[in-house]
Image (cartoon, rainbow, N blue to C red):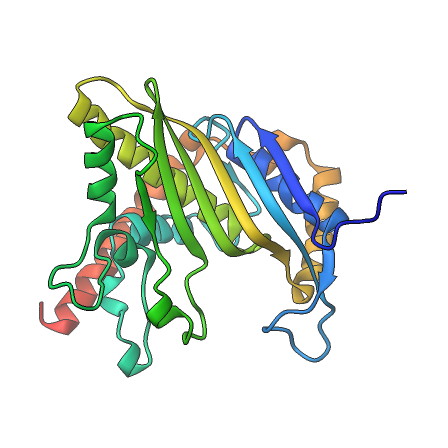
Length: 278
């Protein structure tokens, strides 16, 4: 008889992002190991945890968004702009007890002790792939061992690895830790939006259309916190009551809401700039 794995491995392959995420969280619930976390309250049951390898064949195709995402569509758009455009980089101020980093800062202005200028890793990725589309060196790293070992909430995303196969840009995203139910879908959505941006920049550089292709999401710890169990059971009930099409959005369905969200975000950022005297 084969002994069970200490840390189960969830492996999912799906055509679109909502299907891949949904299958991965269900498999983690069904097969994940039981283990406590550093964030548990005294009465919380142990989390369900697995290593996850989630492959999305066509990450930008519809349906694109799962209705069970935490928060709302405006929160999703805020997160997209935060990672890709850096709209909250000005919130970074560890000395004042504020944010210690953002993914955008680590990706586009990665600072290293002894270096005068920060490194734009996304620009490097585009340059590397333009110079040698087959290169295996087009990656960005986020971990800073000299800082993150002492942070209370160190970066979960560790590395983004891009490679061109013909006219298709693939992306592998590696995470040390990933809240499967409350964060993973938003992470996957935004990382594939970044994949889209890099593909567009490569199209300009190479003079041909590069499309965002296969996306692989790899999480060492893909976990469902014990404090979410009651809510997660409600999510499982929804899977039984609604069809897949009733559980997802196509982009055309939500574009008016996202347009309104962008206007709201722009107005809020303008107020913040005014308050700061920028």
